[in-house]
Image (cartoon, rainbow, N blue to C red; front, top):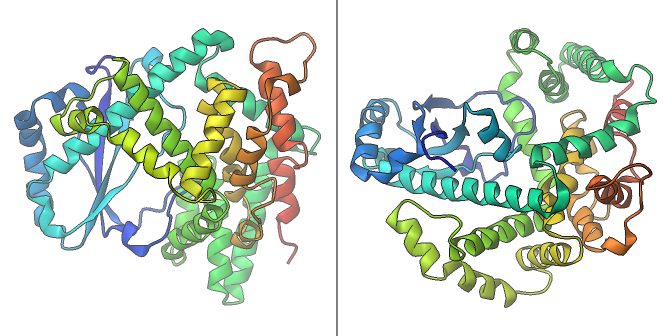
Amino acid sequence: MDEELIELVCTISWPARAQAGTFQKTVGRVAQTPTTYQMPGFPVSLLRDAGAFDDFCEPHLTELQTQVQEPWEFWFNFEADNHIIRQALPPVFLPITQGPYPADRLVGASLELRGAADLLWMQLQTYQIAGVQVFKAGIGMTSHAVHDLYRWFWGNKDRLLPGFETADDRLREGYVSLARRKLSQVDEAMAAQYSKIAYDLSETEEVADELCTEFVDLTAYWDGVAAAKENAVKRVATVAREGSAEWWNLVSDRYFRDGLIAPITTETEEFYSSGGTESHRRELRSLSSTNPYRWGLELMERIETDLGFWATMHAGITTEWPLEELRRRVPTSVVEQIRRDSPWAPDTRLVRLSNLSLPNVSPIPFTGGIMPLLGSVHESLDDALPGVLTHALDQLPDD
């Protein structure tokens, strides 16, 4: 993967929302209530020269010192102009927030920024090698295509829905009306929930801006709505999320030892060379069998053994994507009612995926490759569920 063709973009935000103790993974549009500062993009190769990277960061960090008086956090996104490179990168890659840091830590912060950027670079290399491995193993598809195919299976659930193509428009209009009604009843809490759903379903920036203007007094609540939904999801997704994260860490370590990927900074090199990942794995094995980190990793390893690397690599989308799509479209109470044994719950979905083996794969006429494999995963995990749009419309309150 060419270091010159991928740019990393650092965003610094304050006050640090990580202080709230909530799991604020926002699914849907982000209401930018904290102040953010985005630094210019830079090629990954800049990380090779610590002094040059410090010189790059220094004017931006100096400017921020006069503005930031509260704890802050930062994250990196990546960009690539080359279409082929973009297809080799993760189709869904949520930025990992680093922090919070006290305001005075802006001085010398380039060290933290460089270390985090190098870890992201390792993750990108890992994903690119994993994608090549899956493609060569006979799947014959990029991860983007696998994701699209899985969404296609789900889309078929809603195709008999009257006005299928305009379902999100109907949801948005319905929740706008409900928000207005709740405002007239001086129920700001529910009005905020309904207006946030409408905002998330805005098909254009123009529509989103109009809703922000109309419900400007409610936008301060929107991050709280997103956090409440995420906290509800976290209760039924910990095993799936932690298991996937631990498995990817082991894959990175495997690729490093095989000489397929390489860190840039000395600190990251020392971590991987010291056997820290394997030591961490042994610690996980010593935990209780019900510990979400250990249990999740063991489920992921079982999936890799029984279904193959392709299924493990894409366990994130098959376990969590349906609920992420649903929660953008329903009130918080609907998400909070999902229990651990629900077929919507990512933890339950990971267990079901681990119980599926290749002999159980059902053939699909006139298809080959990954189609029957992914079709069997869809059947095993999703048959008991309605379509996302169908279920969301059923949850639209009448009052």
